[in-house]
Amino acid sequence: MINSIEDTKAFLNVTGSDDDALITSLIEAAESWIDRWLATPMAEMATVPADLKHAVKMLVGHFYENREATLVGVTAEEVPFGVWDIVNQHRAWSF
Image (tube, rainbow, N blue to C red):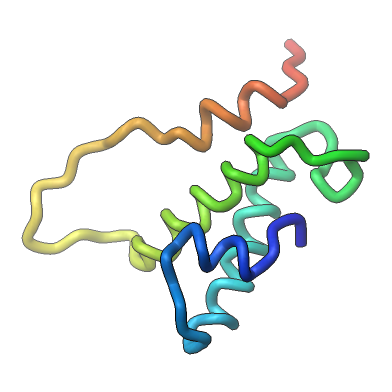
């Protein structure tokens, strides 16, 4: 894993250990999602840029807070997804 569970829990403001297994799996899922978008997986980079590490934490936060694909009883609006903005800067685009 690129991001440690300790750093990610600090980002999420989680102090207990009850969700450690869940957060670990979310880190793995977020890193996998971002790796598929990049030309070079983060694990193969000599140094992972700090903004990509932050994008992983942002995506973990999104997954952690939104565990279901539906909302009930609220008006939903799409909000800017900062992960895209960060990851797109590191993507090797080709057409």
